[in-house]
Amino acid sequence: MKSLALCLALATALPSFAAAPAAKKPRPTKPVVILFIGNSFFHGAFQPVLSYNNQAVTDENFQPDRTGQRRRKYEHEQRPWGGIPGIFKKLTDEAGLRYEVHLEAISGQTLKFHYDSALAIIQQPRWDQVVMHDYSTGPVPTRHSGQPARFFTYATKLEQAVHTANPAAQVYLYQTWARADLTYPAGQPYTGLPLDSMTADLHRAYYQEAAQNKHFAGVAPAGDAWLRAMRQGVADPNPYDGLAPGQVDLWGRDYYHPSTYGAYLNACVLLAEITGKDPRKLGRQEQAAAALGIAPEVAVRLQKVAYEQVRAAKK
Image 1 (tube, rainbow, N blue to C red):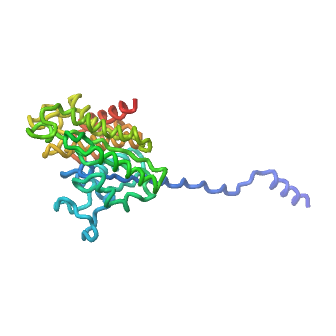
Image 2: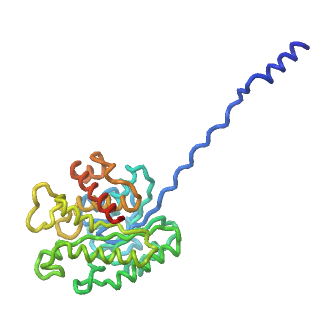
Image 3: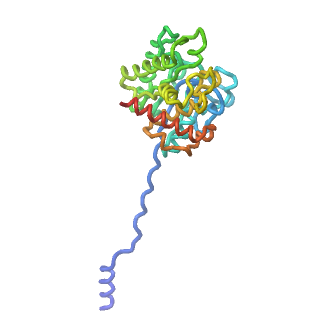
């Protein structure tokens, strides 16, 4: 009996070695679902930008058999697109973010077109973030062949459509860039004016829309970043007179759409504006630049321009 009592006492005194409950596994972070609305100023016009990272982007207008698909403007574009949203997706991956990227882009189209024909895509509660831009000349003054009233009307209508479906969604504008082909040749809307004239008109329109409609979360200043790159000597301001040594051409071969350098700069601007991440931290080893054939030292300079422009716009 004494030995039994002793065993019971020891059992009570000794600490329990029962297995601790298993630690709870952290729940996977829900990806941010983002929709890009626009045209070839998002998807790009030339390879390798046009198809870059397209396997990681849902192109809302691509179906392999084209059944039910709204016809694209150019027949050679019969494939899903990656473009600048594809570059943005890669940058977010490298920055440790989880993004699900969707693209609603038709070449040569306006915000009015998207409102009239793609509202079923745009007005869904699934979008956490939406980024949009108009046709390249749409927001500029009418004396320069623009239709600013249409831009203001349909930017607002699309913002309202997004927020009707999801009041918590963040909606951004994407300020586009000055076109060299409308500035340097004779007989164009900006002939005889400095390049920054068209940039100033685009800046004014996009920021005016954001100022008068407080439901926009912000403006991604891609066009202003192009001008900054030129003023800092990173990019050549006039592709018609040859490329200056040590500078890159932000325009593609049509002096209109972005080159790989222009597209990369735009994606860095989007990263900084929409996610708040500093693109400079991606540095020389950034993978999208390498895949696009952009030298590490050039990538670093473009990352810096994007960061500085977004920071300057916040002041």
